[in-house]
Structure formats: C-alpha cells, structure tokens
Length: 118
Image 1: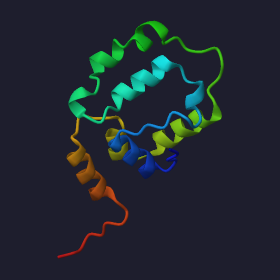
Image 2: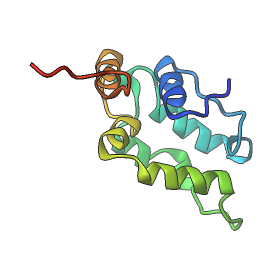
Image 3: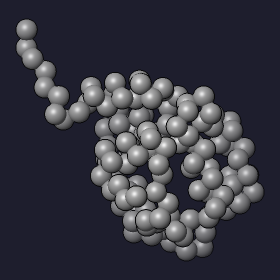
Image 4: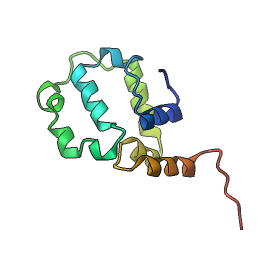
C-alpha cells in the first residue's frame, strides 16, 4: 500500500496500515521496523511510552549509527517534517490520543474546512 501524501500516510497510520515496502524501508533493520510499529500502534494504550522507546532493544543494543550516509528519501522526509507546522508535528509524533480525538483534530485542520464569520 503506497501512501506518499501527508494525509495518506496519516490516515494509513490511523488504520494501522504501515507501508514498509517503499523506500527507504526495505533497507531498514527489522529491529527499527519493530520499534516504529510499536510507536505507531493503533491503540494509544498499547503504544510505547518514551521510557519504553528508550529501552527498546533496537535503541539499547542494535541502535548504532550505520557507516553509510542517509538515503536521499530519508533526508527529504526529514526536511519535510522539519518544515511542518508545530501542530502537525505533535500529531505525527504519536501522542496518546484516541482515534476519535485524532479524527477530530484532522477535521479541525482540514484545508476543506471553512470557517464562517458570525
């Protein structure tokens, strides 16, 4: 499932569908993918806490920096993430919001939503 748009990625995560087939994921270690899966778990109560992330085996044991430089796809996505507004960054960091709360937030920031003046 390829979802390259920001909304497509966000909606796929909300449904629990994480695409590890497109770049840069095929070259990412299984341990790193496991960490990402657990950080983006569809059930907020089952998502990893900050403490659990810092104690995940990939961080503790396997998390050494590779000798190879970052792929251009990774660098471009990091630049895009840095450019996002603060609100979207908080939403994409996997805060402990319920699916309902996330949908409400998405509706609130949707470009199709128009505000009416009283």
